[in-house]
Length: 116
Image (cartoon, rainbow, N blue to C red):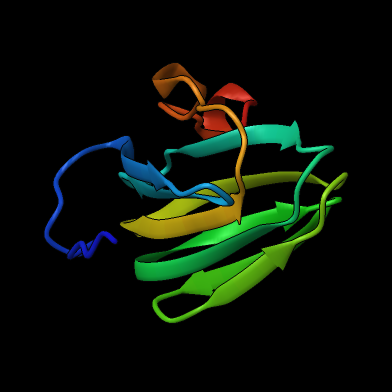
């Protein structure tokens, strides 16, 4: 069993992660304008819990505002992206277990460069 204070961890992008036999959990920390580029996860639904800050989650072209305390469950097969708002964004993603993601998949996705 692991107990972690997700508000105390430093980092950028995927700042921390863990896995059990059945689940993956990843703490994502983005500065304003950064985030996760548009992508499709064909294999898993993903729960996103916003811990602090704000942002916009876009799922299949529909934008959804996120703020501290928000939970979003993104269905597998949907096209999605997340962009941090003016205070940045700290969120936890949880999904059925799979292999890890590379650190470079998350950094610097800004609306200005067309990746967000």
